Structures are given as structure tokens and as C-alpha cells.
Length: 56
Image (cartoon, rainbow, N blue to C red; front, side):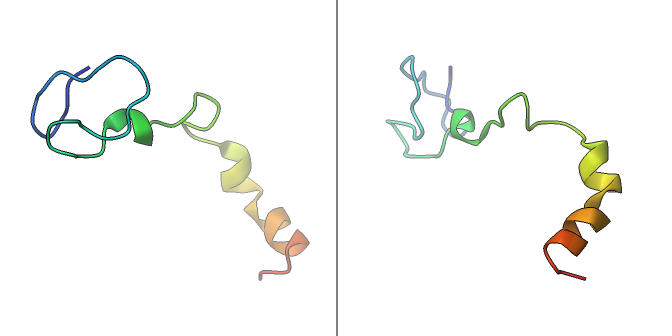
């Protein structure tokens, strides 16, 4: 894994910041597989959530 800001090689594991330049790594911003992508339920059924939470 390499830093996207400065290009230095990063250590294996879950590092959230580059040891060389301190930039935030992409691994910290990656979404889990269950969250990434399009959700038709959230897009089409948002009115049910709004009524349930009294936000109209």
C-alpha cells in the first residue's frame, strides 16, 4: 500500500495516516461492502423514514 499524497510505501495493517507526510490514507475512508453502492430502499422508501421520524 502506498500513500496517495506523497507516494511512500506504508506498513501493512490498519494505518489511518501516512508516517511520512501525515496525510489521511484511503483505507480509513473505505466503506464496508454492505454500505457501499446504491440502495433502492433508501432512495424510494425515504418517505416512510420521514413519517416515522416526524421530519416532513
